[in-house]
Length: 458
Ligand SMILES: Cc1cc2nc3c(=O)[nH]c(=O)nc-3n(C[C@H](O)[C@H](O)[C@H](O)COP(=O)(O)OP(=O)(O)OC[C@H]3O[C@@H](n4cnc5c(N)ncnc54)[C@H](O)[C@@H]3O)c2cc1C
Image (cartoon, rainbow, N blue to C red; front, side, top):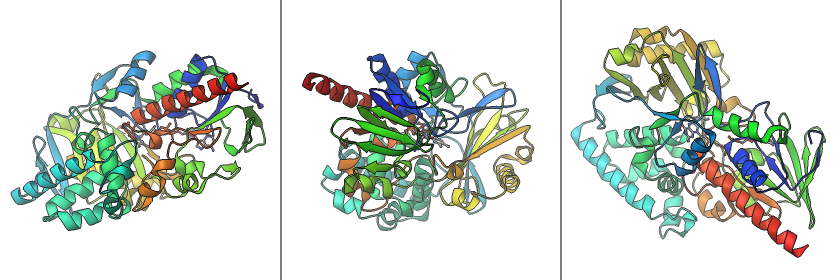
């Protein structure tokens, strides 16, 4: 199998989506192979040792309402624990550091009222966007013609409300408000259960973490699949005809199958040569959905000094390089840590720079936010996702104005024997690990139905 061969289904990509599809298909009796470009599984999730702890360099949080991922965690015997969030939060605006308690940010009253009014409006609009097909919203054309930044300029009256929208957009998408279509933003909010849910810790998208790291999800699925997962095998070409599909790796090895599941982000599917050529709407998914930009940094400390000083570890900043930070201490409290995100413009400014310079700047910024002890970690790690050749950024593919109305119908529609998975294709929790799970199961069900139909016809 490692040298090529013949199977029912080839799955391209051993991220959560691809492994879920492979596992579901294998369990239903299909023969499968998963071809993965990297020398590891997990894609945009990765857990690695930092001192005596295991930390997540990619996706880490799970929300209580993310039913697909919770089901999978249970099946795999993995436990979650609550994200620490007790204590004061930090907001830095143009270099001025403020702290606040509770959920209401340290902004003037008028700005808070403006913000609340706009959150209500955006939540109401988001609910009007059908998750299965966003262009069916009555106002879709108008919303897709506008960026999130333009929305802020037109509908928000105060600088504080606009600042909060900018900060939330960067935190949720790792993209600048100027890059994002309002329709994509509203769809994403509806898909994720509401805009506020995406920003919140308690009861929201940052509510829980996995004991021992999210990377175990893929590691355990891959262990179950065994030799059916083939690493260091970038797929270069997918060729189909009436009777079969042939998948060719960059070193020339070939696998023949009845169906293929492409479980890679659109920006990476673009690199694969399809024959016959994909329909223009599908090709547009690949060319018009670039990834957001994130560098994730973890700093371990002998003591959780920020907790002792009454801070939760949560911070947002418009000043940079760190745009967002959280407490990242292990479930048992034994390994205190902070996690810091460089997002969007800040990640693009810092990608490719010397790691030492980046580390110095990140630690100096954490010290400004939480006090001088933050500058002296006992351990430090980072992953520049923008520079990862098999991700090209993260967390997720984003759409600029005009893209959603053009490509939505092609996001999940199979092209002959080629099926599409990956979090970007999810209806619920698009962009999240939960969405990746949903997409893998949906693609597996499509393939099973297709194989059943072929068996009857044969
Ligand atoms: C820093 C960071 C923080 C995040 N935080 C969270 C979070 O807290 N909670 C959350 O739910 N989500 C989070 N996410 C997003 C989450 O990780 C992703 O939504 C999810 O992992 C996507 O899974 P996937 O299987 O769809 O895609 P991927 O994980 O990208 O898997 C695709 C796989 O395909 C492989 N591949 C690509 N091209 C080819 C090719 N030509 N041939 C063979 N293989 C190929 C890639 O190497 C990769 O392994 C975060 C992501 C990042 C990077």
